[in-house]
Image (cartoon, rainbow, N blue to C red; front, side, top):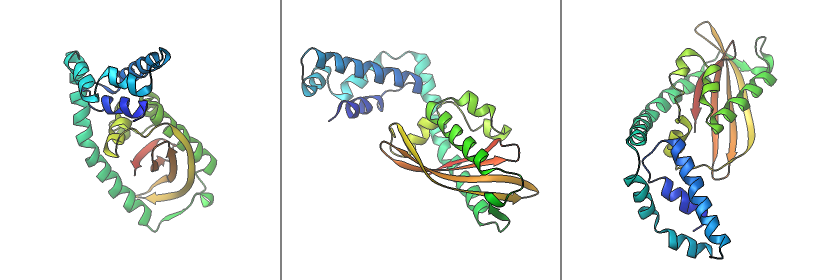
Length: 215
């Protein structure tokens, strides 16, 4: 077992907010590194710290009520994520089969370079957990979806920690005309250390984030 796997195992068992969980992971990694600097092997360091279950129980026993409430709120959000994703799948599926769509290069309203720039910026905000700036560039409806901790909840639904972002892959961008409204709908692959995912992101004519789906 690597140090990262050990720390991730512990953090997944702790009932707290995403922010506190990140702090705990840093604390654990620092403790492991300190033991190794003292001359211990990784196996000896992990053995001295205890099993993942015991360490997590220790944190949970001393967790403030405020953090437990944040955890409960996050669990509620996690339960809502599948519903939201189903809606995004449904909307996204309809969008991509409607005949009135064309490649973004043929659009008179959207610039491919501008869409790609917004796309990569918004995914970067998701990766860094900067929901305040993400909401600032989103439609009113999306602001209600982009709650703090959304990315962590999505990752939990897809197997846990994705690791650090690595690179973007292929993209596909179209202009969609629907119910008298124009949208730019983009799909782009993103590589992380532990997983490859595809983002489907929709922008309205004002380039405000109007739809998000991850698979």
